[in-house]
Amino acid sequence: NPLELTLEQEKWIGSLREKGCIITLDDIEKRKNYPKLFDIIDKEERIEAWIKDLWQWADKNNISSTQLSRKKENLISTKTIDFTGIGLDNIPDEICNLKNLTTLVLWDNNLVYLPEKIINFKHLKKLNLRGNPNLLITLDQKKWLDELRLYHNVFIDNIGLINEEEYRGLKQFRDNNK
Image 1 (cartoon, one colour):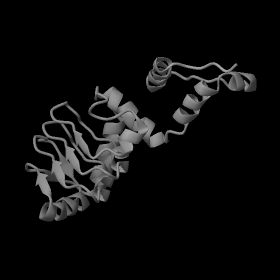
Image 2 (cartoon, helix red, strand yellow):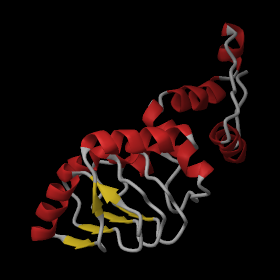
Image 3 (cartoon, rainbow, N blue to C red):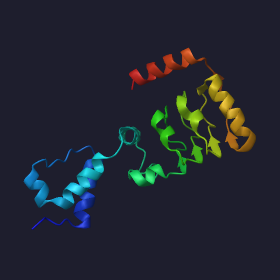
């Protein structure tokens, strides 16, 4: 008979996976004997790399699962992210893959730059960048912000402009010194 896992056991396996534990049962006989376990493992392996990278960034920055869901379905459908006052110095490019995001609050952090692809957010209705005194943006990001301001709520303090080459250099420097 196949092994049946309780809901608690399924959650435990999921939590181990979220913490980076690699759980594999690649023997065909084991797959036959533990189909429920393999359903969980197979589901976990279908998580795209960008999602895993985003979760890893969140874990590194002590962002709770209530602030950024660790469940794929919930993450993808996220409409609001509020990272107020948690000391972030960067936002990863992967966050720009959250196509349903309508509210992004990054108030009172230590951001130096925004993800390059932030300009691709099409459904954003509220953006708060206040309280990031060292924030620098590119000309393309400024144009995007100016356009966003025409129709939606955008809250920003004075921010500096840098050219694309300076942006790439700054980003590379910050990424290499993490």
